Image (cartoon, rainbow, N blue to C red; front, side, top):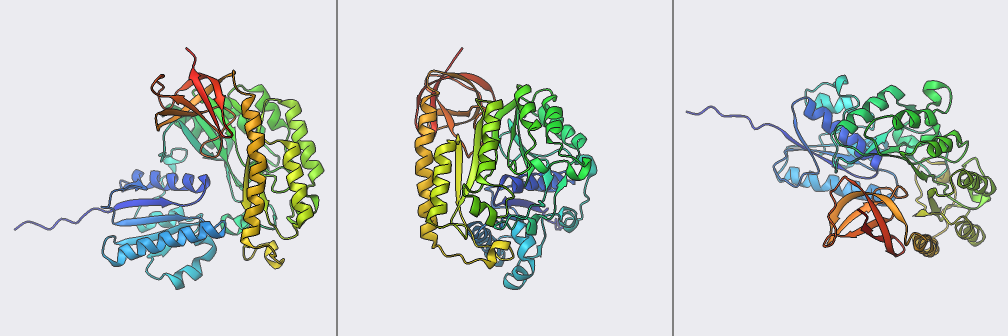
Length: 437
């Protein structure tokens, strides 16, 4: 008679939301595998018996998507298709008590800083020797690097401090070690992310230390591009722009969420700045690096935004001519400062305003892209898709910005390689190019 063998656990991690959540999932994946546990990220295989859902709780749509995903796997559990469902991340941090009451079928809920507690469920240890190492869930040629966690800003609309806690910087030495490990494993581009990257270092070094961090990372052999995301504009450290100017492998690219173009709304938002100060900052940055691509995000429909204030934001976009722009509609989030304010606009009106801003931006983007025709750029090839090799210039980040399309029937490119590409045509959001030998 054969002895019955116990089936080994197989874990599937599902990630919702932003790149910061993706980094957390990659760290969890690395720790699980480092403990000998069979774990995957968003595997299509149906033989995983444990599901970990890393949720997003940022705005209504993201919260709903996270809840729908939890319910999907809870249903699978009730059908006997999976044994356990664990939930972590921002939604779980923010609404743990409510979720436990509403969805008791979930085996455990964890917050955003509960990695050791999750590992304990697998009788696994947090392995400190794996700090700085991370299994990437996408092509290895680019990697997000989270330089800090949490946020100390008091922005009226934002629930991130409720979910992620206060600002904590990671030490420079730890980040350099992580960059070296990534470079050794084929990473060419580092995308620096945080809730507030320009606050980096204040807690550890008693000064804003982002410029030194970027300078040290630029020394890491094998890293071709370093890209800066989520730079808060108030108190912006201009030495960052100097380092960007001096170091050729730091992309001439800045993601700086400005959120609005009306001084009165910025005050209501508690952003600590004015439209005039924001415009001065953008002018100063462009003066130092004329070719820089500036990406920003704006919010349409925040309390206090009437027709006049909205028009001020439209005028702001037309004047500033941002190279890249994203627009969110305001989401009325409980426990934020703005929640006590009247949310007068319908979702339809907010969306109409967002659409109008993006129509203005489309023309700006088209005009700027036309100026790129005939020029040659260093392009990082991300993938092959629909008969094209698809890449990006240093002025474009992954998934959110313009792409360079190279005809795969005429040219061969290797994913993860840099090529020199000459632009021969352009639309609002795409550049068409040939490869230069």
